[in-house]
Amino acid sequence: MSSREKKPRGIKSILMILLGLLLICGAAGLTAYNVWDSRRAEAESREILDQLSDMIPEDLEAAAPAPPVASAADYELPTKMIDGYEYIGRINIPSLNLSLPVMAEWDYTRLKISPCRFTGSYKLDDMVICAHNYISHFSPIKYIDIGADVEFITVDGIVYEYVVSNRETVQPTDVDEMIMNDKNSGSKADWDLTLFTCNTGGQTRCAVRCVRK
Figure (cartoon, rainbow, N blue to C red):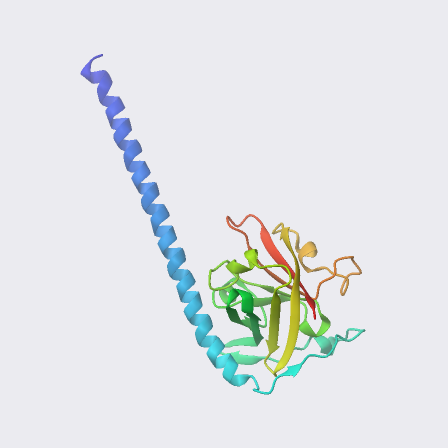
C-alpha cells in the first residue's frame, strides 16, 4: 500500500480522536454545570427556608379533615412573600433528610429555586407538588420507602401529615394521570398528596403518592 493511501486514513483517525475528545469535554462541562446548578439551588432553598421558617408560627396545629364539598374559597391558600415569590409552606421528609420551601405557583424559573405547587390544594387533599431532579430537591424521592412519613406545614402553622402509599412512573404528557384522583375526578386513584420529579434521562416522571394519616 502506498503512502498516499495511508495518509487519508491517518487524517480520519486524528479527526475521530479529536471528535471523541470534544464529546468528552462537552460531557464533563455538562456534568460540572449540573453539579453547580444543584448546589446553587440547594443554597437558595436553604436561605428561603430559613426566612420562611421565621414567618411560620411556632405553635403548630394539626390540620382538620378536608371539607366534603369544595368551594372557591377552599382554593385560596395563605402565602408569604419572599424575594418577589409567594410561598405556601414547607415540606418535610424525615427519612430523606429533606426540608424544602414550596412556592404557590409553578413555572420553569420558579422550579430553579424551590419545589412548587403544580395544582390542587392541601385543604382539599388533592395537591400536587413538582420539583427539579436536583439532589437537594426531589431527586431522592425516587427511592423513598412505602410507608415513609411526609409532612406539609402551611405558612399559618397548620400541619398536614401523610404517609407514602405508592410510587408510579408517569409519562410527561399524561397530565390527567398525574393529577386525577377520587377527590377531584371520581376515579379509583386514592391519594391526598403527590410529589413528582423527572426520572433519570427526563423521559418519564416519578410520582410519589401520599395519603393523609
